[in-house]
Amino acid sequence: MGLSDIGEQVRQLLSSAGRSLNTTEPGAALISHVNVVLMVYDDRLYQLGNGRWSSLSDRRSGPDDRQSGLDDSRSGLDESAARAPSTAARIASAAADLLTHSDAGDGSRNVSHNVLLLLPPADFLAISTDLPGVAHAAVRPALQLQADSLLPGFEEPLSLAVKPGFSFNTAGSAHPHQSFWLPTASINALFDAFADESLFLAAVTPRSTVLINQPGQIVVDEQDNENQSVLRARDGVVQQCLQTSLVDLELPALDEQWQAERAMLLASPSPSPSSPILTFRSAQDYLDQSRLHGGDAVRQSGASYAIFPAAALAARHQFDKGKRLWLVAAALAVLMVVGAIPFLVQAFQLSSLNNTLAEQQELATPARNDQRAVRDFESRWGVLTEYPRHDVPAMLLALQEVISPNVLTFLELEEGYISIEGQSPDPQRLLQQLEQNDMFTEVDFARATSNNSYYIDLRLTTVDFPAYQQWYFPESQ
Image (cartoon, rainbow, N blue to C red):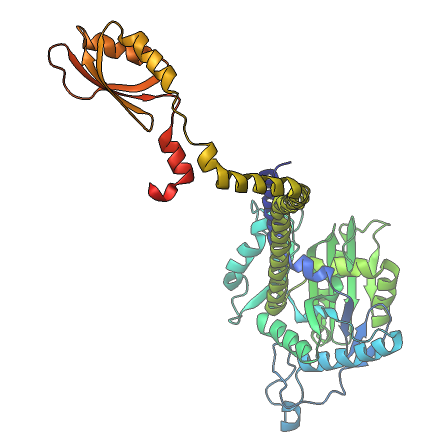
């Protein structure tokens, strides 16, 4: 596998990892890290799983209590009631006390608490919604765009809870689906209050929806000291939801209408034996059901209609961003290591070759010393022994063979160069014959010929006087 193939695989890994992180539902990621489920029931805050509770009524106000959409102050309250702590602050304070005692009892101190908070159904507005032809990915944006028309009496921003991953195109749906709404200010106040207590509020959800994530039909009939609600769900999707205040039921006409609608919802269609009516009349009923189904089932059901604080989603986004950066950094580190492997191999090979060269140089030291001695001898005596020899007899015999029967009147020999003059009926032919002789080179006329006279310069091929001077007398060049 080449370096380019490895780089391509790393790029594909980064691409797929980035897509998986970007497409993961942030709410699902928050729910997956929930390790504490708290429930508000009447005037107490319960911890599902161990059954511990803390009272909300004996909480005292602090200097920085926040007012929220869950504030139970009303116009006409006296001054002492106006100073009462907000519901959000009281819930957060009770949660801190409850979890502090739970940690002390379990021996799990310094544990980060990610909280799923179950609120009374009366705190939410249940709205019937029906959007035929809308894909599940567009359900939430479509409902948020229609918030003004669905809830015209509310001017403040609202947060929405709707079953994720479903479409209104479900075949055989006899009833519109339900969406749950809560003022955004209430969610933000709860998150800030929990943050002040060093707790992380991951999500809030109606407590009556935490055990509906079951196949088939299920009916939940719930009542506390102030409100009563009935909802019907099929395959984890709430199809109908009725809720009223017990104070309103003191009026006979309203009570009669409520009982009729409640009986109709309970009777048609009747739940199957495998999905009986869940009746909750106390917090203990919730605790028993949560133990029966297990904590994972409660968290999964709570995710169905959970509302996530914007700050919690932002924190999760930052975490995912940091995770992506760490992944990119790790991939780059791997790529750098892989890319450096050829250079490391080359460096190792170069070091090995250098060591081999050093060993060979050490072994060749005697030979180099001998070579140095020879070169020293040559530098001392080579100027005499290597002096170019002029084989004058052989040169004269060669000239005689070429020139005869022509006349040679002048000959000069100096450092391998020869100049000749004489008489010949064909000087050009004489020049060509001299060029063809292996003993002579650089044959050329020294000056223009007149009549039968010739003037020729040439050099002996056996004598290279310039090379001798370059080797032994370079300073004279």
